[in-house]
Image 1 (spheres, rainbow, N blue to C red):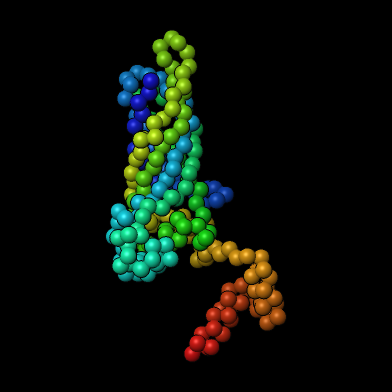
Image 2 (image 1 turned 90 degrees about the vertical axis):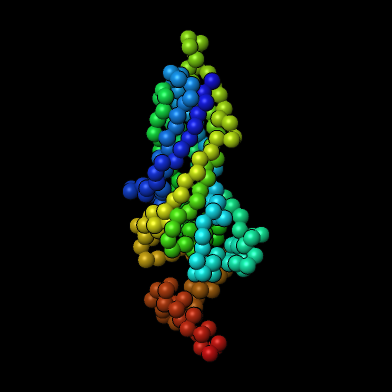
Length: 215
């Protein structure tokens, strides 16, 4: 029966994809010498271990929405679920390097996107929790099936610059904001009634009007 170990060795941006995608390289090793692995249906839960890095004052301010006031972070700074993903790993014997793609979002209603956006430098501490099904050959008895134990995991520190480079490639000098349909309709009417050429102009007009009232 296979005894697999996993390590995340590298991360990069998938250069040509319909959506922003990070590509993580995994090293998979089978401790059972000479046992052929036919294929693996791999599942991974990826979590952000937010407490395992330092935050400067600017990052603390940006992260208040997620964790509250910094003086309470001893209680509120907890791990965050980033995403789930799957991959089919082709056959190998001994060890192999495989690719694990993760599709990312710039939707600021998503907690992980808020977290990544709040950081300007350093690394994001991640933990990969693996599960799935292994198809392997056992002597002359044909194909067998085994489950990957839940305790199989790997840690990786993702440089935040990789995430930012990816988003700059897909959304250059821009951000994505989702609003309810009724809010969009009101904003559309506001823009049309004032003959504002772009959505940015409409938002700037509103922000300036709010600042004038506050002043």
